[in-house]
Amino acid sequence: MTTRAPFRITVCGIEELPGHCEAGVSHVLSILDPDWPVPAAFGRFGTHERLELRFHDVIEDISDMRPPGREHVARLLAFGRDLMAWPVSASEAHLLVHCHAGVSRSTASMALILAQARPGWPAKAVVEEVRRIRPQAWPNLRIIELGDALLGRNGQIIAAVGELYGRQLQARPEMAEPMIQAGRQREIMTARTALVHEGPMAPDE
View (cartoon, rainbow, N blue to C red):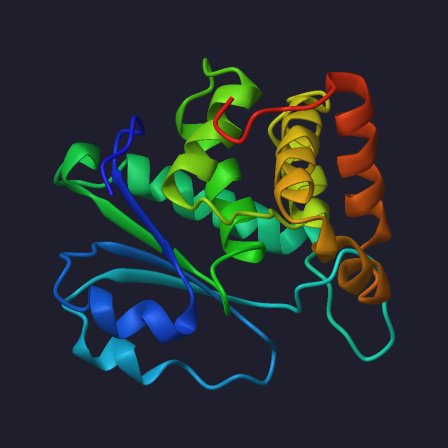
């Protein structure tokens, strides 16, 4: 998809990867569960740079789960800096970010890479671009918190993502209970706080 970023961006889930084999992807950020096999679709991609990170889509420390850590976020940000310094031209680069569903880990990572690439953008503009590219985005809060700190954004990205949660929860209130049961209460609380502060929001506001 075209974007206001200095490079093309695609966000998807594992099942969508085969549809991007001929898309001219130059860089791939691949986020997988720790024991998940490497997707076979990558064998049909052209030459590309790829960073593979492995952690679960959780936001708290949960037994038998590997949450995203500071080292993971530092590595994805370093990958983003490498993309910007790509020898050909960043404008010719095409970044594909994927996780299992293309909703949580991937959109959080994309938000941080965009925020780093465009330091002058307000956090709300970064998150709005994420939503434009991937309308179903629900960025993983732990990744956002770690990245906000590493980028020195003083909580601004966290607040903007909270507003996005509010929009998504307003559109799909049935999401709340399953996410609470999955240990993501803090995201739902953040969404509800944003709705209280902002009031009703139109879907395309």
